Image 1 (tube, rainbow, N blue to C red):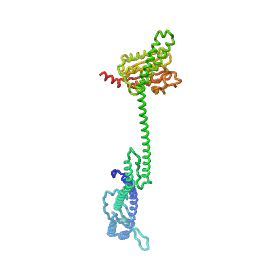
Image 2 (image 1 turned 45 degrees about the horizontal axis):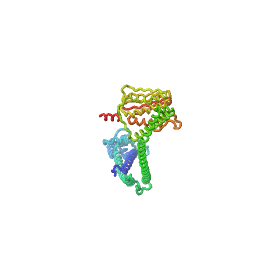
Image 3 (image 1 turned 90 degrees about the horizontal axis):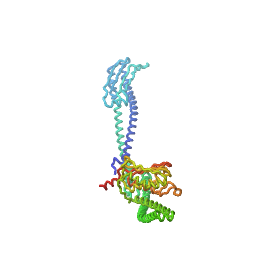
Image 4 (image 1 turned 60 degrees about the vertical axis):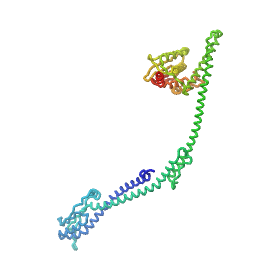
Length: 498
């Protein structure tokens, strides 16, 4: 349970009391100023009444020019505490008597003078009324009142009212705290305890009870909507659990299918390659046999067709099996130091015959002398030959193909460039997808299964290398493979050498 000062009921009551105190202080300030003005008016009226009482005696003293009597009148007048100074003058302005006392020194004098103003001065004329004659002014009574005396009593009353108001606000805060606790905090605590008992694993039947007396208010609506959410969430969890079971079953079936596919391809690799090797071998014997050539040119052509078709089919099967091995993680590579110049020359000689038949100019630029990289020799040759095969296939007769090597700050770069038909920029991202072709199958002018570039990408990834394709439709294509200076392949070679 939260401490008292952290409870919602206490904070609400505290805020209510603070607002009430501030509003009370503001209202009290306005009332104080207004009461001070009224008190100032009452003070003046009272002073006038007092002076009227003593005016007759003062008039007699002024008429008789009796200074002792005038002094006694002023002495009685100063018995009124707020009056601190008084004097009586005759009709010619001569002073008959005067009395005064010092003002009371207080720290509140400046505030009281601001609130009530400076001292109040009152001058009352003194008259003599003879029989059957107009009255004559025979003198003047002057009185000065210290506003601080009146303000002190007034401020004492205001302080008492303020203290009593603060106590009333404190009592109001305690009452509001109790009310908020009973009406708000207690039901919320009951709801929170009910929520804390809900188990996330099983929401069946875990609903919150509405606190008594709150069926139709905001707390009742909150509980109702929370229960609605819990029911919907429980249904969602059940639906997700059902989907998860279905997905697990589908995943198991997919894994079983993948294992069956890999097992099938592994089993069939020998069965497919053995008869193809026999077909290719015997077709070579027929093609190169002088006796068969003497019997007729057609037999040699048939043998060449059989040999070419078998070689093409064997290459497709090899690419498919290599892709399957790489995809299953069973393709092993054997890294070794390779001389780039010799590697490029070897690959160029293999495809030189195809280039001559297509009347294509094939050039090799091995780059700086002594350039070498650490990689799997068979895999790198397969990468280069696949890239060269594509370049030769998609370059029109009379064009050119360039095979080059070089160094960068990050490693060794091998590149194949041509001035062939190029690739649309929107299709470059899909070039390395298995079986993808840029043209429809029925209208495609160029052969192939679409396995060459996916195999290149897979072999490049095995070497931690980077494949980059740049192409312009109708102008040609440049494919770059950048082998890093340091990779897991290089580490394997170092560890083997140790």
